[in-house]
Image (tube, rainbow, N blue to C red; front, side, top):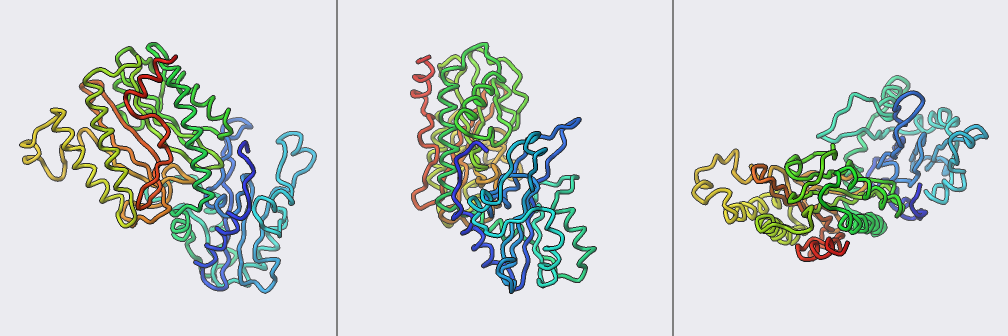
Length: 429
């Protein structure tokens, strides 16, 4: 990994929080993500399972964590299973964690190699009454590919058919929603790297550059500053492309007079930043672009103030929709009379703003949590109002990452978003 060495107390504390939320005489089993085949003898770049990383900080494939906190043998209460390296692995794949390095990162004293897992697991399972497994329960995502945890479930049902199986995902969701101070520091680092990349592209963008060239400049700065890369596929969308919410082709020319919407964020120590900025390709907003941009910026500033304990994302969305509706009317997109006649099931505001304002962010860019959860201090949300007018070649979104608090804290407060500052920085090329 490129990032600075993380300290074990974060992961030790996370495991303690988990143990408080499981049954007595339970066994927890969490496996790393698989290495995903790309083609031939190649794998896609490895990215660790977020829950496993949250609990032990180990950023390596073929890793298993078991927690059996009530086992009579204290040595078996926390075990981390890792790859046993050898001369061939060292030559062909490079360095793997040693037992000492795995201990330094995770704080787990009992480090075993994977070939010990089967025999030790049998001892753990026979002692336990409940076995917690970590399956993906994201309601918006279903894949045909069986994960290591999915495959382990099938084996477990065969080998230990009368054990009580429990869901770990709801507990991990609850724990990961509120960020520890150390996690906030890592997210701030990801946001700071994102800020550096934005300053770089402000000096780079001009009429005639390609969207993928802008992406390359961002990638350069991310990697240069110890990020693993992008937290998600970046959106570099000029002109009408900015009206496609998940446009990732990034293969068109940035033309004079167009706006360029850039949705990007660094990933640092597996924690995500998620930022969007909209800039004029030629360095100067037209009067209409300025008018539309100021409307979105005004709503964003008001929306950030809504990200406080006690509310929900659903309520924030409702309030922001009303704010944007007022701005749309001022911009001449529709009238008050049109609103009075609109279909409540298909409100006019959604024609020009078809997405929501916030989502949770953390180890995943779309982190655990849903729109009905009551917000608490220490949660982190995005704030991203937008305006999309395809017939005018205008797509605008402005997005920052906000810590929920009675006085919300903006992790991206230093990333320029005011029109005058953007124009000035773009002229300093």
